[in-house]
Length: 136
Image (cartoon, rainbow, N blue to C red; front, side, top):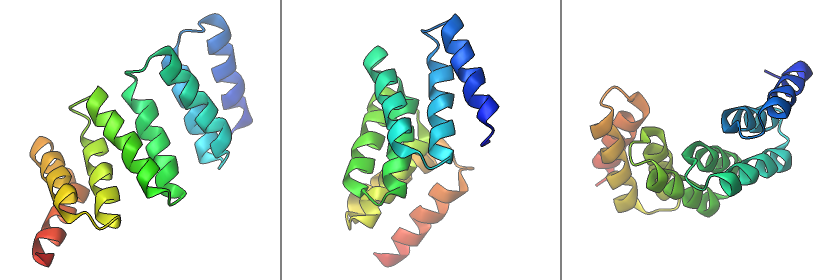
């Protein structure tokens, strides 16, 4: 998880194949887990510069922004993630969470319904949907 050898491994993979976006993504995750958000953002921005449709990079940036309490930026990144991958269930859920935290209950409900409809076993989405329905 925080093993510095992991970073060497990702760098070695990228030296062998500079187009390997998955290795880049894992490098970004490594930085995120260490709390090195700026380095993680650099990696994710590099990924989307290489492939603007790489939805995981937007999702990962959204998760960092959410952790930083930058809800509008988190929402924007989750929004791009669902536009680049319409089946990205977790991105719908987290976009809904951002909407809920910003007071936009209707948007939150729509996203929770979408996530729950796509993946009925996704407990967080199901619970969020039930919680918000009770508030209405």
